[in-house]
Length: 85
Image (cartoon, rainbow, N blue to C red; front, side):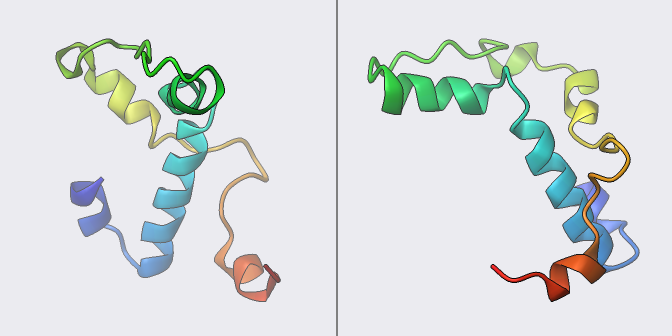
């Protein structure tokens, strides 16, 4: 992410990339959901990560977090500036 962010044309491009990654991390099934399950829901503190070790992570897996989101789901800085939290 740092290398890709470094080559972004603007802060808005970096924020769009970060948003895109966060949305991919939230897709079920994911390790995010597994971490929540193991620590907050079942409280067994035994997450079953997939893949089970960092050495099993492929470049394709990493690249998938940077893929574009479906049309209409990309972050739009113009709408974010005017939205109310």
